[in-house]
Length: 223
Image (cartoon, rainbow, N blue to C red):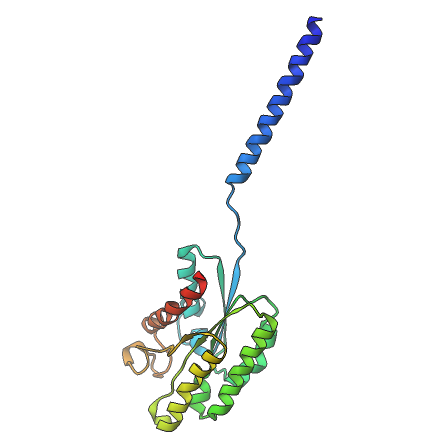
């Protein structure tokens, strides 16, 4: 009889220990941090995005500096630099398709400067920008869109410069895009902030350019 009682007690204790272990395991699982999905930010542009003339574009371009800001805040975003030196809006229109093979959650468009420097008709530049936006939106309807505005030097002609400047705001408003009015604000025309060509920013200029973008982009990432 005593052996039977002892056996019953052992079984009960084993069951209790098993339940306690399950509770502990459940508690530990609840404590584990939930991994957030990493979202992609595609920066699509020309040499200004690519980091032309910098010692280490992969670490010093403005998308790379924005990635540093994102990491410091612990935000779940990965910056993809798709800048190509010399790119025009026509070139971008042809290139955008294959870049959309990987999911895009935020699309930052920086093109048009080379069109302006070449005196390409404003109507053509505007049509190409819209075509790029349409392609992205067709592939990823929920992607958030950001447009970086550009201006051309006055020596391109006052009428052309004025017409060129306005197309970016028109595109942004038409497509409900977050808008940075002028990417090179407080950089363009300031010799110490630009390389010898007078067009591409130095590292100091890139930092200012980064702040111009981050001021608006951070609002998109916090939504």
